[in-house]
Amino acid sequence: MATNMISKRNLGMFMYLIFVLLPIYWLLNMSFKTNDEILGQLTLWPTDFTLNNYITIFTDASWYMGYVNSMTYVAMNLVITLLVSLPAAYAFSRYKFVGDKHLFFWLLSNRMAPPAVFLLPFFQLYSSVGLFDTHLAVALAHCLFTVPLAVWILEGFMSGVPKEIDETAYIDGYSFGHFFIKIFIPMISSGIGVTAFFTFMFSWVELLLARTLTSVDAKPISAIMTRTVGATGIDWGVLAAAGVLTIIPGILVVWFVRNHVAKGFALGRV
Amino acid sequence: MALELQDVSLLMEQQTYLNNISLTFEAGSFNVLLGRTLAGKTSLLRVLAGLDKPSSGKVVYNGQDVTGFAVQKRGLSMVYQQFINYPHLTVWENIASPLKLAKVSADEITKRVKQTAEMLHIGEYLQRLPLELSGGQQQRCAMARALVKDAGIVLFDEPLVNLDYKLREELRSELKALFKTRETIAIYATTEAHEALALGGTTTLLHQGNVLQTGSAKQQFAKPINLDAADLYNEPPLNVFSASVTNGVMQLQQPISLASADHLADLPNGEYQFAIRPNHISLQSNDLTSIVLASKVDLAEISASETYLHVETSVDSAQKGLNWIVHILSIMSFRTGSELEIFLPLEDLFVFDLNGKALRWPDTHIEREL
Image (cartoon, rainbow over all chains, first blue to last red; front, side, top):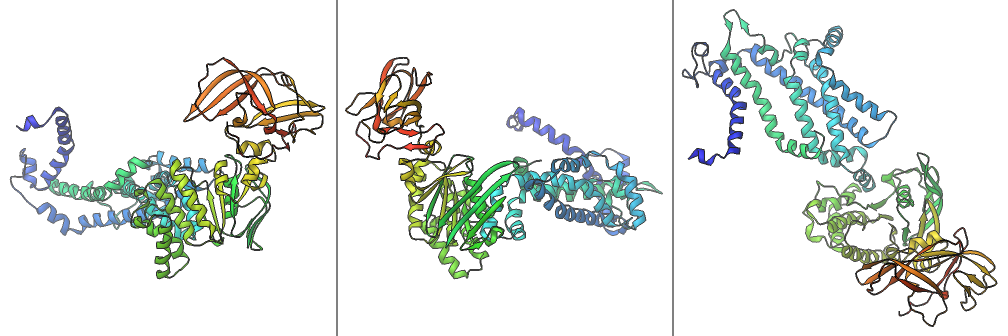
């Protein structure tokens, strides 16, 4: 009966979901197994169910501090990016000035360079000014990539707001700052949601800069996950649990901004 | 208590938007700016509002030079052609926002928002968001926001253009009534002559950044100062033809004596441009002395209960073919290419010199029955 209900179209969708979700299921599956079971035989679900892998992560500071570090610099990056790119995008969308188009394009071209290009200068610079191995170092380095993207996305949303709204607000008596916060920002909240989403995603996932610019105090989870070869070999179960925990913030963010992003895809420049 | 523009010019990127404009708007007056697109109406309003700074000249309000004043300090309000409201605020909050910023007490705000909303018939929609309203209601909301603060000057930039015909008529007559009792200077920009005629007040004709004529719309309709001004008031446009006059005789297809029309009788010898409204041309001879022209039908457009007949005559004094539009107040059908005679009553002719300056106007009279 189930096969009758699944039409051909749904079948395709079903297959697609299986392919997409299979690796994630397998990760989840592994995280609840012991290392013996993972290495020993192929089981479709944990026969020897255990939470020990998660307990290891939540009790060992060298593991859970990775998450704290990652979240710290991601949050810092998000705040800096929005604070910098909101005024910048407003200027690009509202004013004409000499070289505005070139500057806009130059901003975007920053995104075209691979992060590895900036590795050496960042490392040397941060070492010499004492920023090495701080959260701020990673947050600032990520800004190089997130700010252009944020300006570009926000500019699209802002250009969709008619200039007459600004003028009407001034005529009504709003000062610029008051207007920007009370009228303008609520009008482009979808755009801000989309921007925050992309900024978060970049910063959370980025590995190369985050790993190179930190050593101990600000070491991100993605770096810790790549250095888990211990004396007893690779601890597969803990690694899988760490993987699951790394996906969760992404899922949460997508869940919260899903409406904004959907609106953003329809309206703006994503 | 007057608003004055003194020699105001506005140039942007080597383009002249306003050219040396001097105008005075009296307190409590209703003023109409009539002009085509790009005539400078919006530029003029923006200079008045302080949104654009004039390249030269002064804006004076109540004897004070306000040219450099920030928009917030002008104490005026403006309604745009687009329906501009704050989309995330309710209608109530939209209307209340200028009052809140002016630090008016809460009781007073409640009272005035209610009163203004009632006046504009949006009293029952106060809790809705602007986008949940119809176009007409959105524009009423924008108008309410402009009127609620009792500004000394209210600017309207073609506020009714984006509304359908019926709503436009309705809102226009309401607006007219609203400003009857106010001490406010209202300035209303429009491209449509019939709006200027319906609104009354002082009308200023703008053309390519210049003021053509100031006065009542009725006066301007009857006696346009030049061809550009006449053009603004006539849709379909005036039929213009040039002809020479020698000793009171005009030479067109045949010579015709101008003696019977009072306003043309003493026209000196020379070359002139004559003009006649499309609805004054008739297809039958009548007891009026008329120029009779043999013509050929090009096209007949039927619009509701009227017909616009396009015909072509063979010659004017410059020996070239001439096109005419005849406005007939009934439905008639014509075969393309068929020949007929058109009659131009002498008493309805406008006379302009070759530069377009008006020399003679027909006597204003009550429209004849056809």
